[in-house]
Amino acid sequence: MPGDTVLMLVGMDEETVTEEQYAYYQEKTGANRPVMEQFWDYLKGICTGDLGYSYHHNADISSLIAARLPNTLQIALPAILISSLTAMVLGCIMGMKKGSPAEHAVTSMQIIFDAFPSFLLGLLLIALFAFKLGWLPSGALNSIRVPNGPAAAFCDRLKHLVLPVLTLVLGTIPSKYLMICNTVALQRKEKYVLYARSRGLSDTYIAFRHIFPNICQPFLTMVGMNVGFVVSGSLIIENIFSIKGMGSLISQGITARDYPVLQGCLFVSAVVIVITTLATDFLCILVDPKVRYKVHEAQ
Image 1 (tube, rainbow, N blue to C red):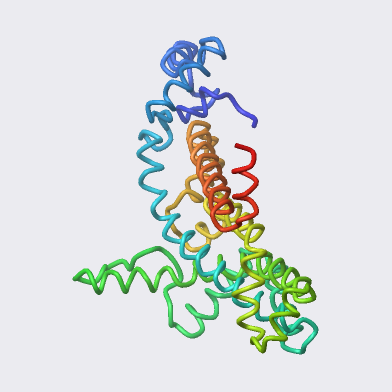
Image 2 (tube, rainbow, N blue to C red):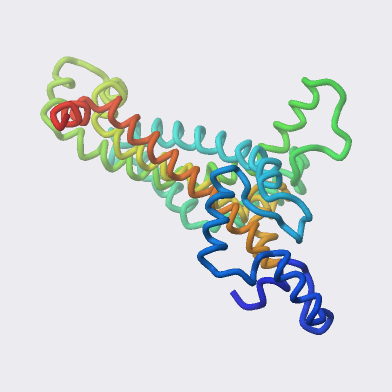
Protein backbone atom coordinates (compact mmCIF):
# COMPACT_ATOMS: atom_id res chain seq x y z
CA MET A 1 0.00 0.00 0.00
CA PRO A 2 1.30 3.49 -0.80
CA GLY A 3 2.22 6.10 1.78
CA ASP A 4 4.57 6.45 4.71
CA THR A 5 3.69 4.17 7.63
CA VAL A 6 4.59 6.70 10.32
CA LEU A 7 2.59 9.51 8.71
CA MET A 8 -0.41 7.24 8.23
CA LEU A 9 -0.29 6.11 11.84
CA VAL A 10 -0.27 9.65 13.24
CA GLY A 11 -2.64 11.10 10.61
CA MET A 12 -0.24 13.72 9.23
CA ASP A 13 1.19 14.47 5.78
CA GLU A 14 4.61 15.45 4.45
CA GLU A 15 3.70 19.15 4.09
CA THR A 16 2.75 19.66 7.74
CA VAL A 17 5.23 17.47 9.62
CA THR A 18 8.72 18.72 10.50
CA GLU A 19 11.86 16.60 10.60
CA GLU A 20 11.88 16.76 14.42
CA GLN A 21 8.26 15.64 14.59
CA TYR A 22 8.89 12.87 12.09
CA ALA A 23 11.88 11.58 14.08
CA TYR A 24 9.84 11.79 17.30
CA TYR A 25 6.96 9.78 15.85
CA GLN A 26 9.36 7.26 14.37
CA GLU A 27 10.83 6.75 17.82
CA LYS A 28 7.40 6.72 19.44
CA THR A 29 5.93 4.15 17.05
CA GLY A 30 9.10 2.05 16.88
CA ALA A 31 9.31 2.35 13.09
CA ASN A 32 13.03 3.21 13.27
CA ARG A 33 13.92 -0.18 14.78
CA PRO A 34 14.94 -3.25 12.71
CA VAL A 35 12.05 -5.09 11.09
CA MET A 36 12.73 -8.40 12.88
CA GLU A 37 12.80 -6.60 16.22
CA GLN A 38 9.45 -5.00 15.45
CA PHE A 39 8.04 -8.36 14.37
CA TRP A 40 9.27 -10.04 17.57
CA ASP A 41 7.57 -7.34 19.67
CA TYR A 42 4.40 -7.88 17.65
CA LEU A 43 4.47 -11.62 18.34
CA LYS A 44 5.01 -11.01 22.07
CA GLY A 45 2.08 -8.60 22.04
CA ILE A 46 -0.17 -11.20 20.39
CA CYS A 47 0.70 -13.73 23.10
CA THR A 48 -0.38 -11.25 25.78
CA GLY A 49 -3.50 -10.09 23.93
CA ASP A 50 -1.96 -6.77 22.86
CA LEU A 51 -2.71 -6.23 19.15
CA GLY A 52 -1.28 -2.71 19.05
CA TYR A 53 -2.59 0.83 19.18
CA SER A 54 -4.64 2.74 16.60
CA TYR A 55 -3.72 6.41 16.35
CA HIS A 56 -6.64 6.90 13.99
CA HIS A 57 -9.17 5.72 16.62
CA ASN A 58 -7.03 6.69 19.64
CA ALA A 59 -7.71 3.31 21.22
CA ASP A 60 -6.18 -0.10 21.76
CA ILE A 61 -6.95 -2.43 18.87
CA SER A 62 -7.90 -5.24 21.25
CA SER A 63 -10.62 -3.05 22.79
CA LEU A 64 -11.81 -1.94 19.34
CA ILE A 65 -12.19 -5.52 18.14
CA ALA A 66 -13.76 -6.62 21.43
CA ALA A 67 -16.40 -3.90 20.98
CA ARG A 68 -17.06 -4.67 17.31
CA LEU A 69 -16.84 -8.48 17.14
CA PRO A 70 -20.12 -9.15 19.07
CA ASN A 71 -22.02 -7.03 16.54
CA THR A 72 -20.59 -9.09 13.69
CA LEU A 73 -21.37 -12.36 15.45
CA GLN A 74 -24.99 -11.28 16.01
CA ILE A 75 -25.34 -11.19 12.23
CA ALA A 76 -23.02 -14.01 11.23
CA LEU A 77 -24.04 -16.81 13.59
CA PRO A 78 -27.83 -16.67 12.93
CA ALA A 79 -27.16 -16.36 9.20
CA ILE A 80 -24.88 -19.42 9.18
CA LEU A 81 -27.32 -21.48 11.27
CA ILE A 82 -30.40 -20.56 9.22
CA SER A 83 -28.70 -20.94 5.84
CA SER A 84 -27.16 -24.31 6.79
CA LEU A 85 -30.45 -25.77 8.05
CA THR A 86 -32.39 -24.40 5.06
CA ALA A 87 -29.82 -25.72 2.58
CA MET A 88 -29.80 -29.13 4.27
CA VAL A 89 -33.59 -29.51 4.27
CA LEU A 90 -34.13 -28.14 0.76
CA GLY A 91 -31.15 -30.03 -0.66
CA CYS A 92 -32.25 -33.38 0.77
CA ILE A 93 -35.86 -33.00 -0.36
CA MET A 94 -35.06 -31.68 -3.84
CA GLY A 95 -32.24 -34.18 -4.30
CA MET A 96 -34.77 -37.01 -3.96
CA LYS A 97 -36.95 -35.21 -6.56
CA LYS A 98 -34.13 -34.48 -9.02
CA GLY A 99 -35.55 -33.62 -12.44
CA SER A 100 -39.02 -32.69 -11.18
CA PRO A 101 -40.61 -29.27 -11.86
CA ALA A 102 -40.30 -28.36 -8.17
CA GLU A 103 -36.58 -29.17 -8.16
CA HIS A 104 -36.01 -27.16 -11.34
CA ALA A 105 -37.82 -24.15 -9.82
CA VAL A 106 -35.94 -24.25 -6.49
CA THR A 107 -32.55 -24.83 -8.12
CA SER A 108 -33.13 -22.02 -10.63
CA MET A 109 -34.06 -19.67 -7.80
CA GLN A 110 -30.89 -20.59 -5.89
CA ILE A 111 -28.73 -20.02 -8.98
CA ILE A 112 -30.30 -16.57 -9.38
CA PHE A 113 -29.59 -15.69 -5.74
CA ASP A 114 -26.03 -16.97 -6.14
CA ALA A 115 -25.51 -14.66 -9.12
CA PHE A 116 -26.72 -11.58 -7.23
CA PRO A 117 -23.94 -9.47 -5.67
CA SER A 118 -24.50 -9.18 -1.91
CA PHE A 119 -24.57 -5.37 -1.99
CA LEU A 120 -27.29 -5.37 -4.66
CA LEU A 121 -29.32 -7.95 -2.76
CA GLY A 122 -29.05 -5.89 0.43
CA LEU A 123 -30.09 -2.69 -1.34
CA LEU A 124 -33.10 -4.41 -2.94
CA LEU A 125 -34.24 -5.74 0.44
CA ILE A 126 -33.87 -2.28 1.99
CA ALA A 127 -35.82 -0.68 -0.88
CA LEU A 128 -38.64 -3.22 -0.58
CA PHE A 129 -39.05 -3.87 3.15
CA ALA A 130 -37.78 -0.58 4.62
CA PHE A 131 -38.77 2.11 2.13
CA LYS A 132 -41.60 0.59 0.05
CA LEU A 133 -43.47 -1.42 2.70
CA GLY A 134 -42.07 0.20 5.84
CA TRP A 135 -42.08 -3.09 7.73
CA LEU A 136 -38.45 -3.12 8.88
CA PRO A 137 -35.73 -0.57 9.73
CA SER A 138 -33.14 0.15 7.05
CA GLY A 139 -30.02 -0.17 9.19
CA ALA A 140 -28.14 -0.11 12.51
CA LEU A 141 -28.71 -2.56 15.35
CA ASN A 142 -31.00 -0.38 17.46
CA SER A 143 -33.49 2.41 17.05
CA ILE A 144 -32.36 5.93 17.91
CA ARG A 145 -34.54 5.70 20.99
CA VAL A 146 -34.23 2.19 22.37
CA PRO A 147 -37.56 1.05 23.90
CA ASN A 148 -37.67 0.69 27.66
CA GLY A 149 -37.60 -2.79 29.12
CA PRO A 150 -35.53 -5.84 28.13
CA ALA A 151 -38.33 -7.50 26.13
CA ALA A 152 -39.01 -4.37 24.05
CA ALA A 153 -35.28 -3.77 23.50
CA PHE A 154 -34.84 -7.40 22.42
CA CYS A 155 -37.69 -7.14 19.90
CA ASP A 156 -36.24 -3.90 18.58
CA ARG A 157 -32.85 -5.61 18.08
CA LEU A 158 -34.51 -8.53 16.28
CA LYS A 159 -36.28 -6.16 13.86
CA HIS A 160 -32.94 -4.52 13.02
CA LEU A 161 -31.25 -7.89 12.49
CA VAL A 162 -33.81 -9.26 10.02
CA LEU A 163 -32.57 -7.55 6.85
CA PRO A 164 -28.79 -8.00 7.28
CA VAL A 165 -29.25 -11.63 8.39
CA LEU A 166 -31.65 -12.27 5.49
CA THR A 167 -29.13 -10.80 3.04
CA LEU A 168 -26.39 -13.13 4.30
CA VAL A 169 -28.76 -16.11 4.37
CA LEU A 170 -29.90 -15.64 0.77
CA GLY A 171 -26.30 -15.20 -0.36
CA THR A 172 -24.90 -18.27 1.45
CA ILE A 173 -27.65 -20.87 0.88
CA PRO A 174 -27.03 -21.60 -2.85
CA SER A 175 -23.57 -23.20 -2.63
CA LYS A 176 -24.56 -25.50 0.24
CA TYR A 177 -27.92 -26.32 -1.33
CA LEU A 178 -26.42 -27.25 -4.70
CA MET A 179 -23.83 -29.49 -3.06
CA ILE A 180 -26.44 -31.33 -0.94
CA CYS A 181 -28.97 -31.60 -3.77
CA ASN A 182 -26.51 -33.03 -6.30
CA THR A 183 -24.95 -35.43 -3.79
CA VAL A 184 -28.33 -36.75 -2.64
CA ALA A 185 -29.35 -37.18 -6.29
CA LEU A 186 -26.28 -39.36 -6.88
CA GLN A 187 -26.75 -41.34 -3.66
CA ARG A 188 -30.39 -42.20 -4.37
CA LYS A 189 -29.21 -44.65 -7.03
CA GLU A 190 -27.11 -46.63 -4.55
CA LYS A 191 -28.13 -50.12 -3.47
CA TYR A 192 -28.81 -49.22 0.17
CA VAL A 193 -31.32 -46.58 -0.99
CA LEU A 194 -33.05 -49.05 -3.31
CA TYR A 195 -33.23 -51.53 -0.44
CA ALA A 196 -34.72 -48.89 1.86
CA ARG A 197 -37.36 -48.08 -0.79
CA SER A 198 -38.21 -51.74 -1.15
CA ARG A 199 -39.02 -51.75 2.57
CA GLY A 200 -41.65 -49.08 1.94
CA LEU A 201 -39.79 -46.17 3.54
CA SER A 202 -40.65 -42.67 2.32
CA ASP A 203 -38.19 -40.61 0.28
CA THR A 204 -38.03 -37.96 3.00
CA TYR A 205 -37.15 -40.54 5.66
CA ILE A 206 -34.53 -42.12 3.40
CA ALA A 207 -32.98 -38.73 2.60
CA PHE A 208 -32.60 -37.60 6.21
CA ARG A 209 -32.08 -40.94 7.96
CA HIS A 210 -29.94 -42.87 5.47
CA ILE A 211 -28.44 -40.58 2.82
CA PHE A 212 -27.58 -37.43 4.78
CA PRO A 213 -25.46 -39.21 7.44
CA ASN A 214 -23.33 -40.58 4.58
CA ILE A 215 -22.78 -37.20 2.94
CA CYS A 216 -22.70 -34.88 5.97
CA GLN A 217 -18.89 -34.77 6.13
CA PRO A 218 -18.39 -32.49 3.08
CA PHE A 219 -21.43 -30.47 4.17
CA LEU A 220 -19.93 -29.85 7.63
CA THR A 221 -16.64 -28.89 6.00
CA MET A 222 -18.41 -26.36 3.80
CA VAL A 223 -20.29 -24.91 6.79
CA GLY A 224 -17.02 -24.58 8.74
CA MET A 225 -15.40 -22.73 5.85
CA ASN A 226 -18.51 -20.58 5.57
CA VAL A 227 -18.18 -19.41 9.19
CA GLY A 228 -14.78 -17.86 8.54
CA PHE A 229 -15.98 -16.34 5.28
CA VAL A 230 -19.06 -14.73 6.83
CA VAL A 231 -17.25 -13.41 9.93
CA SER A 232 -14.34 -11.93 7.98
CA GLY A 233 -16.24 -11.06 4.81
CA SER A 234 -19.24 -9.15 6.16
CA LEU A 235 -17.63 -5.84 5.21
CA ILE A 236 -20.14 -4.94 2.48
CA ILE A 237 -23.20 -6.00 4.50
CA GLU A 238 -22.14 -3.99 7.56
CA ASN A 239 -21.47 -0.90 5.46
CA ILE A 240 -24.83 -1.15 3.68
CA PHE A 241 -26.77 -1.54 6.94
CA SER A 242 -24.60 0.90 8.97
CA ILE A 243 -23.56 -1.74 11.50
CA LYS A 244 -20.44 -1.11 13.55
CA GLY A 245 -18.84 -4.53 13.34
CA MET A 246 -15.58 -6.10 12.23
CA GLY A 247 -16.37 -5.51 8.56
CA SER A 248 -16.86 -1.77 9.00
CA LEU A 249 -13.71 -1.62 11.13
CA ILE A 250 -11.71 -3.25 8.31
CA SER A 251 -13.26 -0.81 5.83
CA GLN A 252 -12.25 2.16 7.98
CA GLY A 253 -8.75 0.72 8.37
CA ILE A 254 -8.37 0.41 4.60
CA THR A 255 -9.64 3.95 3.99
CA ALA A 256 -7.38 5.49 6.65
CA ARG A 257 -4.51 3.05 5.95
CA ASP A 258 -4.59 2.16 9.61
CA TYR A 259 -2.16 -0.75 9.38
CA PRO A 260 -2.35 -1.90 13.03
CA VAL A 261 -6.16 -2.15 12.82
CA LEU A 262 -5.93 -4.18 9.61
CA GLN A 263 -3.32 -6.47 11.16
CA GLY A 264 -5.45 -7.00 14.25
CA CYS A 265 -8.68 -7.67 12.32
CA LEU A 266 -7.00 -10.07 9.90
CA PHE A 267 -5.32 -11.88 12.80
CA VAL A 268 -8.66 -12.34 14.60
CA SER A 269 -10.27 -13.50 11.34
CA ALA A 270 -7.48 -16.03 10.85
CA VAL A 271 -7.95 -17.32 14.41
CA VAL A 272 -11.70 -17.72 13.80
CA ILE A 273 -11.02 -19.67 10.59
CA VAL A 274 -8.49 -21.95 12.32
CA ILE A 275 -10.84 -22.64 15.24
CA THR A 276 -13.83 -23.39 12.98
CA THR A 277 -11.67 -25.64 10.79
CA LEU A 278 -10.50 -27.64 13.82
CA ALA A 279 -14.05 -27.84 15.17
CA THR A 280 -15.27 -29.05 11.76
CA ASP A 281 -12.60 -31.76 11.67
CA PHE A 282 -13.63 -33.01 15.12
CA LEU A 283 -17.30 -33.02 14.10
CA CYS A 284 -16.48 -35.03 10.98
CA ILE A 285 -14.73 -37.60 13.19
CA LEU A 286 -17.73 -37.78 15.52
CA VAL A 287 -20.42 -38.13 12.86
CA ASP A 288 -18.61 -40.41 10.38
CA PRO A 289 -17.79 -43.89 11.71
CA LYS A 290 -15.44 -44.51 8.78
CA VAL A 291 -13.29 -41.55 9.81
CA ARG A 292 -13.36 -42.70 13.46
CA TYR A 293 -12.24 -46.15 12.39
CA LYS A 294 -9.35 -44.72 10.34
CA VAL A 295 -8.22 -42.51 13.22
CA HIS A 296 -8.37 -45.48 15.63
CA GLU A 297 -6.50 -47.68 13.13
CA ALA A 298 -3.79 -45.02 12.69
CA GLN A 299 -3.28 -44.87 16.45
